[in-house]
Image (tube, rainbow, N blue to C red; front, side, top):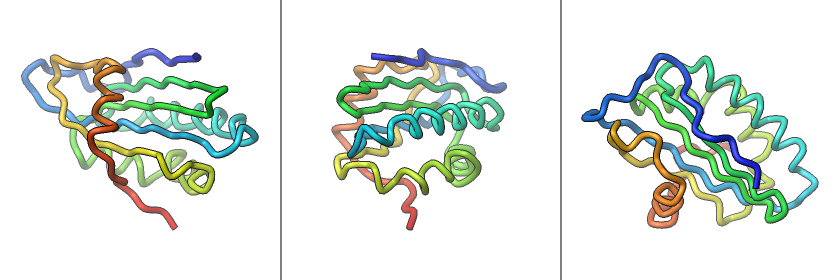
Length: 139
């Protein structure tokens, strides 16, 4: 299982008493053939994350044989998260790959205290299956 461990980015240093927004995604793909493109585009998103205002950090777990990917990013606020998902490599990736995501996909936003950053994968995965919603619909 390849993993990108928690990677702090930007100028946001989580303050223990403050609340942040965690975006947790579960991305099951419908075919193995799209995985190379998915991994390439994930690298492009990592570059975008590194320069995104309001990003505190990110992590990813890839279960390649199962075609399942988990991502987690932590944001200063809703506005900076929204700007990130609606621009650049992230927007292009969602447009290119959304048709290759199975209906079980999850996009969940969770409020997390700075003292809980980085959030454990067990907690993040638990949150993803308690709630399910899309924050952005692309046509």
